[in-house]
Amino acid sequence: MASAESHPQNDFMNAARKERKRVEIYLVNGIRLTGCIESFDQYLVMLRTPVGLQGIYKRAISTVQLDTGTRPAPRAGRPSHGEHTTRGPHGSREPREHREPREPREPRESYGAQPPAERTPSSERTPSDGPVVVTRRRRLFGTGNGNGDGNGHGNGGGNNNGHE
Image (cartoon, rainbow, N blue to C red):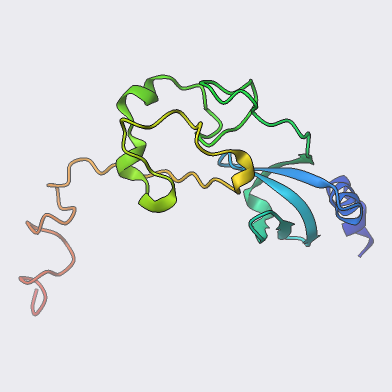
C-alpha cells in the first residue's frame, strides 16, 4: 500500500487534485486536455473539463503539468513553438494547407467543417472550446487484390462454402 504513495507522479497529481489546480494533460497522440483532476487510480485519471468529466487512461498520457495559462493568442498562421493547436503537435506543417486533405476525412461534418474556400488555418476554434480529437485514417491501396473486390476473397464467399 505504501508503494503507491511513494511515486512522484502520484504525489504531483494528488497535490494538484487537493489544491484544485488546473492541469494540462498531453496525450501520446498530441491532444492537449486542460482541467482539474477529480480523482485518479492506477489506470485512470478523471479530469473535470469545461465540457464535463472525462476519464483518461494513463497509458494514453504523455505529460501532465500545471496549466501554464498561455494560449496561442496570435491566431494567424503558425502557433508558437511547443504549442499544440487543433492541427495537432506538428502544427507548422505548411504543405498540408494547400491540398486540404482534412475536409473529406472529417467524420463529423457538423463539427465545424466549412467549405474549403472559407477555411482558414485553425482560426475558427480556440482551445477553450473543449478538447480536440485528432484521428488518423489509413488509406487503402491496391483494393483490387482481394480486399473486398469480390474476385477471389478468402472469406468462404460462394464457391468454397459447402465443400472443399
